[in-house]
Length: 92
Image 1 (cartoon, rainbow, N blue to C red):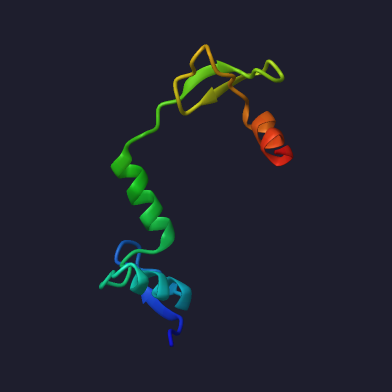
Image 2: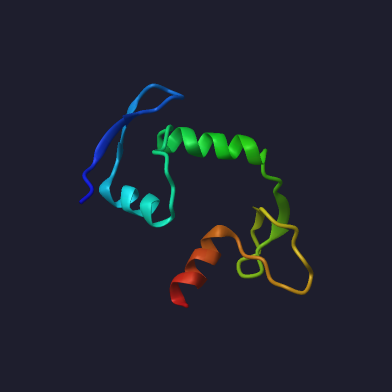
């Protein structure tokens, strides 16, 4: 029913593919308009709209390395560096 379409990004002018799966997703959600920007331009626009993220200093509860996290650490919960967090998550 749906076929991949090649669209042109109104931001950067590059061509991008609006896949059949994406079209089906849009139709299921009732979206009427096709995307006007490629993925990288959409992501850049979202990042700009949300502003820069604030990071907080923390110490990993597992390995003791200093790290930065995108939330304010609380003393009652452990904070993990990205390496330890990925390892813990993979073992869960």
